[in-house]
Image (cartoon, rainbow, N blue to C red; front, side, top):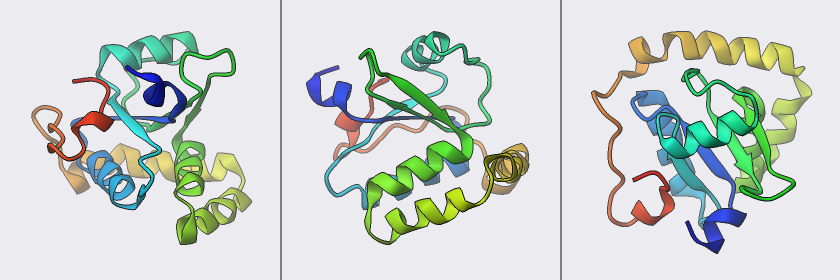
Length: 144
């Protein structure tokens, strides 16, 4: 996986979800320093990470962020907290959105998140299989 990947936050996302794939593309376009790495929730890597944190690998209705992968201080964020973390790390105007999002109590944020997640395939579509990244970003994906 390499030293860069181990120190980079890893975004775990539903690889067949149209909304999740759009979120990944959003991050890729704005992550000028290539801070993030990505892995499908359906991957062996995601199952390993989620298992360590007592999370179900079968729960595909969330996005997660793993920080400090493979280190003693490894942590796992999910749903709205994962989104806020990503926005904060992107910086700029997106970095300003993170604390604004966190003003809303987490149970309320996560309730809205779950409503969107419940309808995401119908609204944003679903792929038959996880789309492959293009050649320019392939190295940022850890589960190929």
